[in-house]
Length: 297
Length: 289
Image (cartoon, rainbow over all chains, first blue to last red; front, side, top):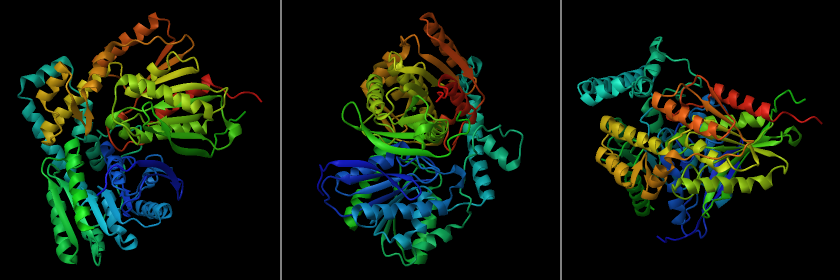
């Protein structure tokens, strides 16, 4: 591994005017192009710039990479609510082709986050990457009733927390001083507006914005993971130990490994949340991914 | 003339140079037809940290709407945020960076064009400080501006500590002890995965009561999206009063709407978009041929 190469970033426009950012090392040391697949929301910098920093680090190690905004996200044109897993897959194919034109090779490594992992799995046979790193992948796209059940479980847990807080002096002090953010509690934490939409309660606020988009295609986890059948590359799944859904994902991928004989390694960072929201957590998961790639390639 | 909106807009992303040589990611949205441009270039200063990510698409739509109305609009990411290079830095350096960006984009646009600044949250604070004394700026639109950056950072730290207590045991140093240490001794900490070093925290502390002396022709609009909390309202009244005594022409407007910068997945804020568009259109009408 040679460090110290200069990393250059340049913006690209491809397909239907999608915006991408190409990281090119000044000196191509390793011929291992990386394609980043973002999650459902946000732009190609990723949560707390995670993908941007990863791209820079890969570039400093001699690997070119491309990250891009899906249509309807970031700076790419398109309607936000038209986005779905299949449109994401189309955009990813276009991005892979763009990367091939720029560096002369299809991506050897796919790195995806959250629902971007479903896209990576969906395209595994077409892109044939050598390695895939799935950061906190979605186990599946749930049918609506399961989403409601999950929201209810979540809300119940928070309600219990708030009931406990009512026995604290500090809570009452805040209430009396008018420092409690009721709006954040009801809509941000308890998500009564989201539940209200499911149950058609009157609490659903008048939205001044498009509703939060959810993937519209409900498929069982097997649908996505079955794509791994016949895949000869290797997969690293990284999960945050504080992510409530980690066991579900671990179980799904464990079963898929057995069912399809796919080579999947799962790593859990006990201190991190779902998005590895800490500088140390982010560094840990990058180090693990880097070591895994070095070992595997 | 030009009553019908522009149907095609050009969106172009590029990297500009920052104050310390870092690459600054900037996006230009402009009417596709050059003859359908007004004499104003809008510069959008985004918020920082995770508010930047959450509000990204709303600002994209705002820029698109302005472009459809004939305004060339530039958005950029401050260093250490979004797709720009570098690390989080002091408020003064960000202010200098905003001025540097303006210096770089002005030669790219029509020479006679005047400038308008649109800032959201902390971006409004930085942008206003950057443009207030610059006579090329004809207007500044401050969207739910942060008036006391130090208070803002403390609130964010506090909410992060609460979140960590409730939902996770993350190792991002957002503990009550750490927060107290930051408040008392200006130590470094981190927030939402961003490292906030000592200088960064100090610059926020110093900026708490900064009052700007804008030039006389700067038309300023403070645009709130919702009824602000009581503490914020008091700070805002004080801020407006301070500036009014200095003869600043400042208007205040509020519309209903959810704080889109505080949650993921909100793509548009139509009332805000239309309000900004109306303000710009009145200030910069189409020129008669």
